[in-house]
Image 1 (cartoon, helix red, strand yellow):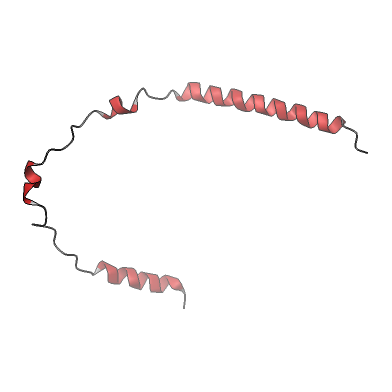
Image 2: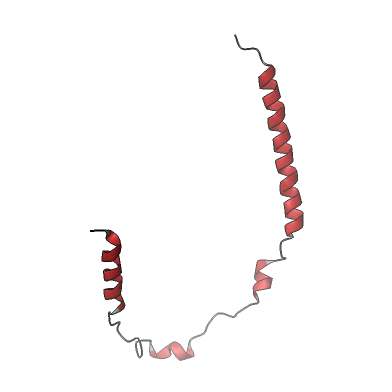
Length: 82
């Protein structure tokens, strides 16, 4: 028997499960509890990234690495093997 029909049957049975109610289970002092102060997300993340500048930087890095590899390949082609 293939596992897919068995998996579907197990998931269908799990979907019919009764979960206990959570109403009334929180402690009585939860309504008066102090919560942390919320701050705007932009203050926490810092300045937004500049994708154009990052793309140029990555392109320059990759070009430099490519040139180094081409030089290394040319040197290896010229090397004599005994």
